[in-house]
Image (tube, rainbow, N blue to C red):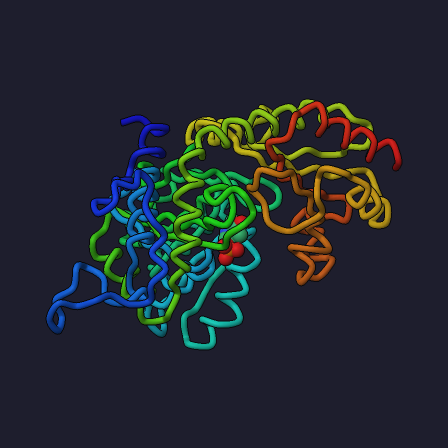
Length: 380
Ligand SMILES: *Cc1c(COP(=O)(O)O)cnc(C)c1O
């Protein structure tokens, strides 16, 4: 079955007792046992729930993996993964990982003796040298935030595999609709379902997807043991939303492309970041591993901090908020929001200047979005 068909049908079965075409929401913490230990596959919702199972079947099918485990948040999923390692193990990650990923490694797991090391993922020598040290996990994100850098999943996963290193790719920005890391050699896909998979800015959720039965049982163990389960209602909303993922992603990417064309020649724009632009330094890699370029666009404006703040507060449709991937357009200012905890010099070294703005392009009519940008920019 093709992607759009899988998105609608996978995991969905009519309810046997009532014929309800859509799965009911199983708001239950526990399950009746006919004799001690005689369950119908579920005993306590921290460990499992029919709504989790439906969403997991969908997630696995969309990522072309065999198994998925659903969690309370993207970071809940990462906590589950990291809790599977041992004291003295090292996680190798690339500069530019999501701020919350860094914080979890640096402020929590490091205290328990799980080390981490950050390298420049584009430096092939540094990568080979770091992989030779046999980290327990290689973790990276592509496209990454907020500059939409691209890493070659196939090349990197192969290098890791040759050294017996497990690779996990954060596929939140691309979604399985545009990129399938498991088919490119990654061992684990990590998703923040809060973003495009949920898609309506109304739930927090996360998932890990894999082809390995061994990893799947570790993921389930961690959810139950650490207590990282989502609510059945959130799982149900996620299931419902994933059915329209193909339609939404097509439109997000189309609208983002239009915003790129609009901003490309604007006199106030200094640099534009979008993996679908032939001028992107990794355009050929993006083209090779992605079937579309998703809906996030970043732009560095020739504006001071004050002017940039004024600009992004002046929009009527692009709502000033953290997060991304919802049907409504959002705008964020990395240097004072998502990356505020990084010192200014370091931030500028990372090219996260005060004039940098990240757009999560939504599904509104493109003419209205362009008008919003036009009037905001005219006021600068
Ligand atoms: C939001 C996000 C996360 C964390 O997910 P939560 O659901 O917020 O816990 C991880 N990676 C990326 C790329 C994200 O955008």
